[in-house]
Length: 371
Image (cartoon, rainbow, N blue to C red):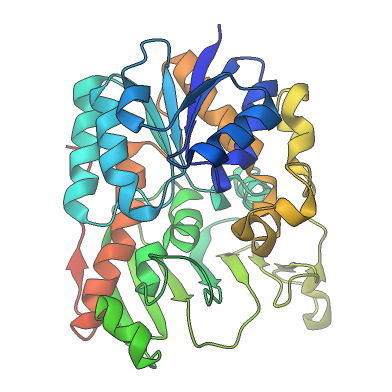
């Protein structure tokens, strides 16, 4: 069985074209981009005949089974809803939406249409996450006691909608791993803003904070997590990290990109507790046709790589894992991970965390997306 895939948005989206082309259960059927010159350039480069510059025309094509949306953040909710209502399965880059109401609407549209929705959260398919997941599932971590994550990035010079964006409005890269490891659901959140960004940036979204740091309490669990984000006016190398503390072992992310993470093992002599580890690649979990795509630099010539891919260190080899999960979920008729309710929960943590920060850190409860 083969699924006909259409990719919408060909900046970051072009990174996925060769993966779908080689996936044994996918056909890279169509591409969509408003800029016709760019559309034809990518279409010619990858040999894709079906090309659309109009999204509504693409959705009217009955041959398309699923869309993978890589458009700008403000378009995610509208395009996801249109696709689900047109009877297409949806994969969408992060975040799911920009309001809690839109998240609820997408979950509802998913149920009404019977179609699959997957937010393409890179971190929960990165080799680091897969490594820690393996440690957890084999019992090496023991009882998990606490989770922590950060995403710090200098967004200076990024296009249109990025300047002045509230840090927590783009929080899924740090919320995803702390919620996703144990498949926990965020119950409520409290967040503080710290520092101030330049006035010309702050006034765009009425968001003054240089850093936002949030505590998340999980539902039906004794666990909480701590996440923090910065986008402007903070001196820091790109860091997309998560850390997990268990009673037997703990995993801590490296402070500098080219260094190694650390495993701490309990009950050893103090100098022997920490040990640097090399995280293995997890290409072996994938069909052989796409396993090679977990290695950085296979997508495109270096000078053409998308800025998020270059800054993000190749997103931990996650792209082929996400593609495989999305395609497999459609074929197996099961929920992908993360599904619509999980994606809504993770996205809403960030949206409501920012609301909390604007109100001095008050507790805000998340809606139940599983109803």
